[in-house]
Structure formats: structure tokens, C-alpha cells
Image: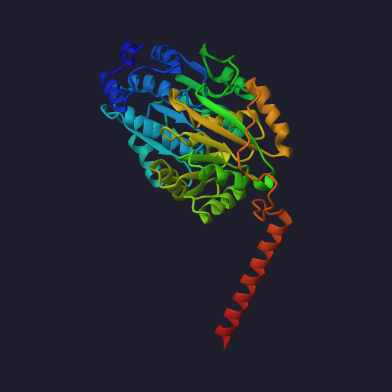
Length: 412
């Protein structure tokens, strides 16, 4: 099947041609026709399957002929990065149409976002928390809303957004089309869909969540304290031109990025403690190839979309299988191929077995030739909590002493 067979607006077909897309992916083939017919859709779609276009194309098609000046579609995403990614794809697809869009998320000023509400852009792409902030203001009315999309709904559950979602729904018209996309379908999400959707077309809901078929997966058993050295060795072999590396905590992301930079690897990090400007710059630098390695935490996993990304590395084994699926799904996107490596210390074997049970296969173990697995190292990514607290107290004491000395000089 080609996109032209889906009878989409000519302007959208031109946008697809500009992007080099000639045929829809399986989820697009399944989701677009019922969505074009106005049906609610409940889709369990894996990361990297082309689901963003699967919900954008039918919504944009229906908006092309509608009057301008009122927001008629709302897309809700869990993270800022994903909101920006969805808006970018919307702009690419709709470039030959009059449709306008805007992103609404935290970490930046509310002024331009307020303008988007007041001017009535056609599509708003929003994160739950910032959207609810706007709904507290009189200008944020979406009375003309006709299409509501939830993207990565299970991640919103993981991030604690479910109560916020229920509050948001009170501000939206009940008569609307709802498209609901989630990589997994845990019970609270399934219950939410039963409350929101009207006789939905269900796509792949019973399919076991699994990484995309184009991903080659492997496990590197390694002592915890040698993970940094092993990653450096893999990078120095030259097999990985670029790598997205996931750590368990923001603290470990910072220290791993510092470790790599000190050893001549162009690396940057992205996580929840970084400002929006820093996160945007890090992601753009990675996309442009300025940074060879981007170290990230799971908070950013759903919003990173890098064309032809060849390698994802789980520096730490994720605690739940769903996070593994989303992490490795950053590669082999849209039916391409990629490789996903997971570094597993002895104490992480339990989490690895849980992942293998979830994906239904045992992952191959790999030993890197010529790497010294018995080496001694002083590299410490995880500073004990007590040591960190002591350091913070020492810095504060120094700041108080400097303030006292400054005050004493002023009085003289």
C-alpha cells in the first residue's frame, strides 16, 4: 500500500514525499483509515513504529478543510522532548497546508504559549503539568476541540501524571475523537481508555510488547566498577559512530559524561535537572553529530528521535522491562536497523532475567576481546549519599564563612 491509497489531502501527500516516505508502516496502515473515518482508536504501538504519523496524518487531514482561528486538536505527551519532536513532525507533514501548531511545556516562559491559546493555533502539543497550569487561566479555553491524542500514555502513568490527566479531561469537550497510543497497556491505562473512548478500534492491544525487529541486542557482563572503562573501550574500537547511553540516575549521567569528555570523547548529558535550553542544545548537538555520545536518564527516553541512530547502550539495566523496550527503541526506528548493548553487573542479573522473560528470549552474552575484566580502577560514578551530604554541608559552611568575612570587611 502507498500513502496515496489512503486518500489523504494532497498537501499532506506532498509533505510525505518531501520527507521521502512512500509507503506507510504497519501501524499507520492499521490506524489511519479508522481515524480518517472519525472512529476512536486504541493502539498498542511499539516505540519506533511510526506511530506519530499514524495519529498526526488523519488529524491533519480532517483539519485542512476546517476554519482557522480555533484550536481543534490537542496532543498530550509525557515529556518536553517528545512534545518538541511531535511538533517538528507536524510542521514537516503540514508544510504544504495552512495548518499551524504550537508546543506547550514547562521550563520556558508561558508568554508565547499563552499567545498560542489566544490566537487559536490548529494543534497544541502539550505536556500534562504545563497544560494544567494554563487551564487555570481564563484564556486557555478549548471549547472548539474536536480531536484529542494521547501519545506514550504508559509513560505518563510511570511519571505520575494520571491524576493530572483526569483533571485535564474536565476542561475538554466530551464530544470529540480520541486517539490513544501506548507502547504497553498496564491496568490503570486500560481503565482510563474504558472511561474515555467510545467503541474504539483496537489495534495490537493483545500483542506482547517487544523491541522492534530491526534491533540486534546483546549483553556485556561486567563488574559495576568497570562499566565506564568497557564503554570507553567499545567507543575506541570505532564500531559505534554515535551512541545514546542510558544511566539509572542523573548523578551517574553527569559523572559518566565527565569521564568520557576527560578521555577525549565528545559527550553531553540530558536529564531532568538540566534547563530546557541545556536539554535542547544537547539533543541538537547530538543530532548534528557535534556530540558523539549523549548520556540520558529514562525521563528523556521517550523524546529522543535521532535519524539513523545506530547504537543504544544500557549502561545500567533498567528496573522494569517496559523501560528496556523504550530505551532500545531509540534505535531501529521506522523499520531501520540498529544495535542495543546492555552492560550487566552481577547484582543486576535479576533485572536482566525479568527483561528476558518479558521479551520472550535470552539475550546473547558478549565478551570484549583484550579487555581486562580483572583490572583495578579508581573511577567512581556513584558517590555514597552520606558523602554527598557531607560535601554539600561543607560547601554551605564555606559559603557562610565567606559571607561573614565579607560582612566584617564591610563594617570596617
